[in-house]
Image 1: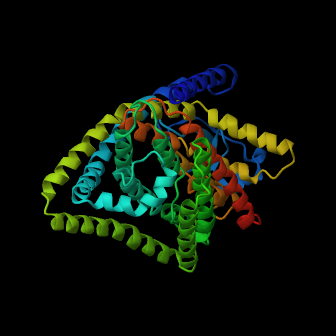
Image 2: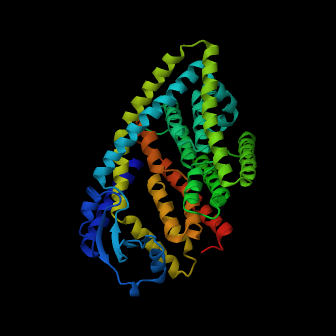
Image 3: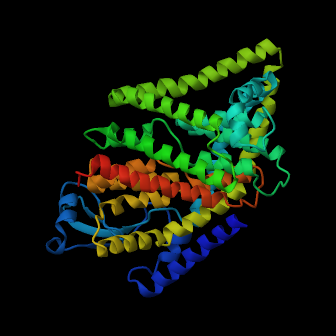
Length: 469
């Protein structure tokens, strides 16, 4: 029911916001067209601007060849040397979004088939059960409803490991396989179980060791030190993950102070800390090389071990792979309706201007309170990240190009981009894969953990980069 109400609220709020803007705000008569048939990058209301009346910050930005994002309008210098303002659509309308949702699912088919095929081999060879035995002492406390050494434990470890290494393509099939395993022991098939909620909340917290894509974007935009956001990112995402565990544990009455849980958490923290110390000494190129070797090397090593184990167990390897791959194809098709529904609702929110209203309101509020408002320029990334990863990435890049890659806003946006995952996409895909309709309190827990990550990110941005403008 919670998911249904949130979905309905998204649509109602978006339509009401669009009606208000169409009736009361100038230059918004085409808002309904933008929401339905518009596409990202579409421009409208292009007009020349008087440079004598233009704020110095905007003029300086566009004179240096940049496009300035002024909120409702973009400002730029044309090829003939004139200055113009125009409205640029930041997201696709519902028609293009519905097509994109299907494309996402279709593009998942090959990846899902590959990884779920290898997972099928690992299961028949006993590898997943072995992994479950290793992690069992910890997970049996954190997931008390799981039977001893249940295969879901191994699937969850694979998902968390892929997430930690930034292997999104691998994390999704591993995560869906974990949800399917947990669904097998779920007594209420249309309602999320405690174990599923704990797993998804931990997954959505987005614990990642090396934010390679963020570092690469900063380098491409000529940041003086692209890797400087690495430690704040790692701390913020770790805080969000711990917050998710604490929130769900409190709700499920799990005692997190049990020695086994504490030892595992402290052990993982120690490993991450040692990794941070090592990576801190590397250059940008060194970080990229290490990440590529570690992440991709581990995937190939896992495949290698799975095949060796299957040969040792003397199972029909290729038949096992094909059987698992078929399941990957079926899951990718099954999630299409859930993806279309969720992404269309998110599209309506984006194109209706709801986010602009929220950001401007926050800016005015903190200005009225007399507080430092530099962090507000980085908030668009945080607000849209639970809804769309690509949109949040676009917001981060916009902050870098508008304010400079080494500005406070750009650094904060980078940290926020690396702090959490796309909550509503995860809800649509993972719950959709097992046909769960009642998500209980999982969305609230995920968003609360996201909030912890956002607050932590802002604090760390001021701590590490408070001197920058």
